Length: 413
Image (cartoon, rainbow, N blue to C red):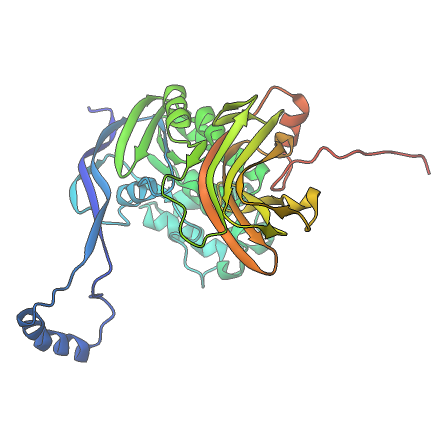
C-alpha cells in the first residue's frame, strides 16, 4: 500500500484580469453582446484580457503523517494552492491526487452556514466530511470544550465574533479525524493562547499519523510544527526540504533591506526620496533581534528651499496594520528650513517593543497641512527574531500589537 497522502503533478491555475466579465450578465446583455461581437471584430476591436498564472507547473509529493509548512511572500500562490487541494478551486491544468478525507480551514466562515447555530454547524461539517451522526456525537463535547463557545452553542454563527468563528471552525476541522488537515493563516485571527492550543492540536494530529499542511507567515510556528517546508515564489515551488534550511533561505533571499531609486528626479519636484536602508552596527541588514536597535536611513535630494518639511515612516506588520509611525518633526519641530542639496535622515528604532515576525516600512515626506512631497511604500522589509531573554519570551504570550515592558510599583494600602 502506498504511503503517499498528496500527489501534485504539473499543477497550474490561471486567472483573467480585466476584459469583459462573463458572469452575472442578463439575458438581454448576452444577446446584445452576441450581435455586437462581429461588428466589433470588423472594426478591429478586440476583447483583450490579461492573464496570469497564480500557480505554474507545481509538483510535489507528501507522505502520510507528515506536517508540511508552506511559506512565501504575499501573492506567491500559497492560498491558491490550498484552495485547489481543498477542491474549492478547480485547476487550469495538472493533477491532484488526495488519499484520505480532507478537512480545511482557509478563511473565516469556510464551510459554515451563517443562519445555523454552532451546534448545527458542527453536525453539518461532519456530514460534509462523510462522518456518521454517531461519530460526530462522540467528538461533540471535545469540540465544544476546545472552541470555548459553550454559552453560544445554540446561537446562529452569524452573530459570532471572528475569533469565536475561527475557534469553532478549527475545533471542528481538527477533531473530526480527517486524514488530511489543511490550515491557512486564518489562525492569526485568534488570540495568542488559542493559537498555542491550535498548534498543539496540529502536532497531535500529525503524531497520530495524519497529514497536516500549514500556511503561515509566523516562522516560529512553522519551525515548531513542521519537519518539511515548501517555499513558494511567483506561483512556483522555489524550494522544498528541511524546515530550518528552507526558512533560512527564505529569510536571506526574500527580504529587501535596501532600496535605491535609479530614475532621475522629476522636474519641479521639491524633494525626492532616492534611498532607504536598514542598518545594524552600520551594516545593511535584513534580520534583527528584538533585544536591539534598527537604524532606518533615508536619503533625500532637495531641489529648492523648503520650510517645515518632514520625513515620516510607518512600520507595518504582516497583517498590514500600522504598528507605529514617527516623523522627523517629533524632535526637531516644524520650523526647520532645508536648503537645496542632499540630506540623510536617520532614526534609531528600539525593537524590544515588537513581536517577532516580518515587518515592512513605508516612508514619505510632506509639509504638514500643505503638500505631499514624496512617498515610497513597502520597499524595505525585515525579519525580527526572538532572542533568549526570559522577559521577552514571557512578553510574547501577552496580547497586543506591541510589547511594552512598563514600570510598575506596588504599595501596601
